[in-house]
Image 1: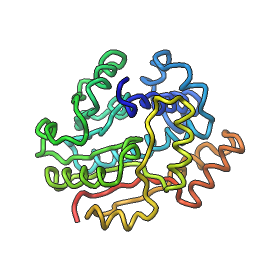
Image 2: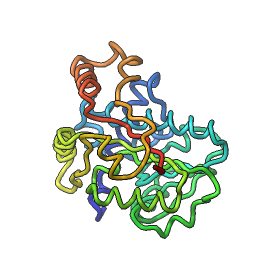
Image 3: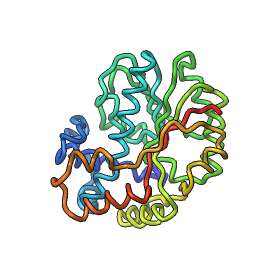
Length: 264
């Protein structure tokens, strides 16, 4: 693909396939597993067990938040920013939610070629940083924006502008996204670089969540480390290196799922 960020979309897709195939008691994604043959082989070979689980963990956590959001509000919008090959509309079977999958035109074209489309999905071919697609969302409904594995590829100034726009047009909405520290971004860039020079570089990180909340003028609903449930559910089923890395990340809060109310 021409866009380097779009080139990374198979990394989380492969991770969800791995996690669902090897640890279904933790993460279940049958549609992704069925499409395993669509993934270029290198994306299934390079990653370690820990790296696969780390990538899938963000989806495990955001799925729980999505289900809680739907249970709370009933009919609502779930908007995936930079959706890639996300299959959440199949993982969460709830007719009350409309899942909007937003990504660049070349990514949406690939989705249409290799992924089935659920009857409660809407595909939008656009950049998440424009505002033109806002009119395609039913603003009368509560809206949860989900950005899994996306925001780190941009700079903080761009992220703050995005949040500012969402606050203006969707004043009672929420946003959940994954964020790591500056050290974590260095590790993540090394990991992604192993897939080849056509991969994008990451920039956005959060060392202090309270400072980011002040900058974005939002309200923190929750900040959860990645592996709280994974460590409990998987236990001795993962290797020692994976177990240690999960403990390290959680203990020092190196990676978090940040859940914001887009209001002060």
